[in-house]
Image (cartoon, rainbow, N blue to C red; front, top):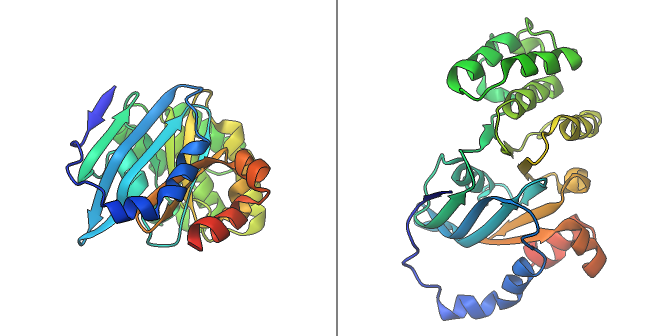
Length: 258
């Protein structure tokens, strides 16, 4: 186990506790510890310009799960993923990991357009000791992506597919995606969902930030809702069965609306 951060010193005010009591019950009602925990955030506070982006956030990531992180633009989805990845430190609270740091998947826009797919694989090999280059090249070939092709000549969909391959070919059990399907047409979204499920390693999990909930909710086993610094984690199937709503409808009516 690895632990980072410091214990929370700030106490929640009584009026906030009362105001959010119902939502706090929602957050905890559906999550059980039935499988191995890969990562846990405990009572984490993260501030930005004096504003609490995350306010006493608690999240659990278990193995064999695909988890969506849902919220408005600028609400803190990327901040949450960067905390999980170890790229940011909490102002207070704890982040507990079962093993090494997760694989944080960059989008295609983070590479220069003049580089080739093979160059990108070389970068990952040099930068990440746990990167399986041979598997990455095999998956590129299966995906009909020529490793000699420059990124500027790849479609947006294939650029994102390349980044998924690179990130998922690190020998990690937890993979973090930040808006991987943003700006991609519906055909590619459906195709890449199938692709993602196909190449996921056993006993691994994915946490994916997105604002495209309608398109992706069928992919998620759980969702983490963010609003006003607060966090609620729920199983998608129980949202549908217990509340008789789609995940998107539940978010709009029960989380965002309040």
